[in-house]
Image (cartoon, rainbow, N blue to C red; front, side):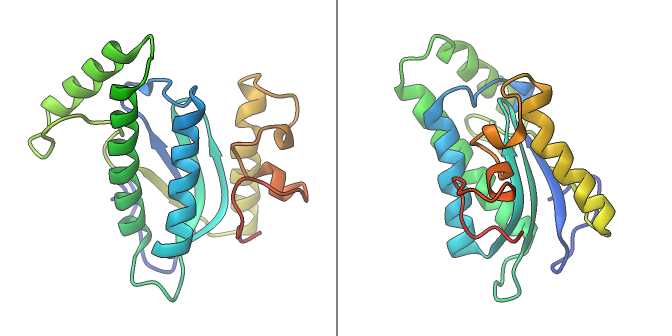
Length: 182
């Protein structure tokens, strides 16, 4: 659930999800692809309407809602997305050769130890920030913001050069995710 703003069924939202401790997990391609695959699954099976997205090293931005045909709210979709991706990524970290493996797992274990609902690791911060898109101006501002993230972090020179975002789609090219509502 969104911690700061109310969320309703027919809204479109600017959403940010962040890894606990702002740990740079999404520097590994397999973890990035877990996010992409989970977003595809949510589009196809959960009713996720995705307008834009950008995955950075430790957080994910979406502009999204739930479609009319779905029984799921955006809160339901995000809850299931976070649950699946956290378990999959932690399991992958446990199994891979990663120089930061022990440090990350200890951090995730410690974060989970302070929450009675968690029996192991906590990967995502609680809730998510959701701001309703109420105007074209706000939508364009948020689109510019998320697509400029990789430029601001000096990963690429131009937004459309970053493949882990919808900037490619908005530049008229094929991106990693299809079916965006542009």
